[in-house]
Every structure is written in structure tokens, then in C-alpha cells.
Length: 233
Image 1 (spheres, rainbow, N blue to C red):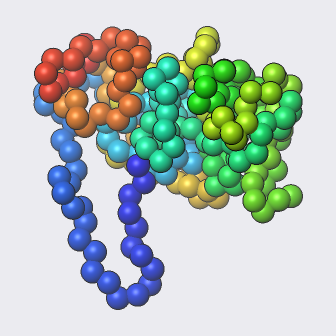
Image 2: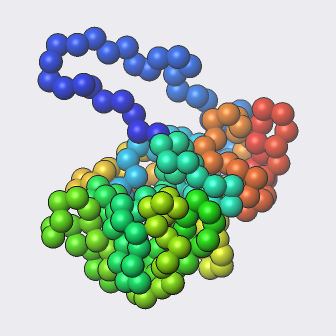
Image 3: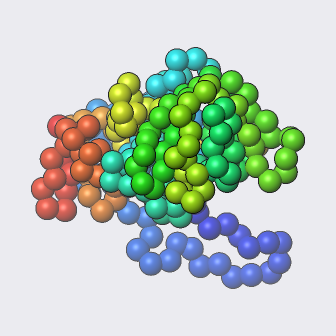
């Protein structure tokens, strides 16, 4: 989730972090884990160490191969919680060729990205390729122009949402890596992305420090859970 920022330019006292503070990620020695560097797509704000990540599997565009937050499509998402870190809610019902999301969220996507459209009833996902992003015509939302798709089920009443395609087959989302450190990918017009390190294998992690390590993600990553630990072999 996004970190709390200072509440305006006025004298104030901020005690942060409160509660448990920053969780430790590694139980095993970090130095023996298989770790390497990756680029994360911009627009997702602050991502904590331990966040499960996926890979943008679009065919063209600036986002190809960059990391995006894993979306637990199979288990379902809840907006306002960690499960929705990589998802953008539809602000209007989808049409055959347009998707309307917040202007802020639109900076998560690039022309050429393939997006997956889903809803709370699980009527999707269906895929569509972005050909244009309009952030100026309407101050209420950005309009993504996409290739024609079967759109009738993807409405605000059904909590329609979109996410970046991150696998070749349905649900077009596969967990790939775990963030090794906390990063800020930027938001809105300042969505510049981030360089980060990710952990792939040979590590024992604290399970309660992992974000979106669902049953499906565990299968994707071939991890083993043992008590309070998650083992990346």
C-alpha cells in the first residue's frame, strides 16, 4: 500500500513508522540468494519489499518485459487492499473500443500494452491492445482506446477493472519474482518507474512479509511454505 506522506505545509508532529515498523524479509542469508536487477513499470506508487511481481507480456511498446505487481485474479481482488496493487478500476462501463480509468492510473500503461479486462463476477478476463491514451479531453478520467473486444460484462456495477497482461494464457497473470527491497515507482505524471533487485531462488523468506503470495502465486513460483517461512528453491 502507499506510504503516508506529510499532511501539508503546516507545523505538525508525525510519528512514523508506527506499530511493527518495517518487516524483515529474509530468514536465510541474503548473500546466498539468487538476486538480480530488473526494471519496474511506473505508476504503481510505493511497493514494499516482499511484493510478488509479474512480467509485462505485451508484444510492443515501452512496457514490454518490465515488472508489474502481481494481480491475484484467481483468488480475487479488493480495491483499497494489497490485492489490487496492480489493478485499475473502470470509472465508466467498457465499450467495444474504450476503457475509462483515472488519469492517475493511466500512467501505468503504455500505447502497445495489452490489458486484461475483468470484473468481480469473474466474467473475464478478456484482452485488448492499447492504441491511444487520452488524458486531456475529460478531466474526470483518461480514455484508453483499445482493439475491439467483447465488452458487455465489464461495467462499474460489476466492479470492472483492468491489469497488464502478464502471461500467455488465461488468467493472463503469472507470478515471476519477489521484490528484494522497497521501491517507489512514481504515480501519475511522475510515474517514472524504478530499478530494483528481485529474489528468484535459494532463499527462505518470512511469510508475513510477502504481499500477494497467494496459493496460485506459490504454484507459479514453486515455493514451499513451512510454518512462518516461505522457501524459494
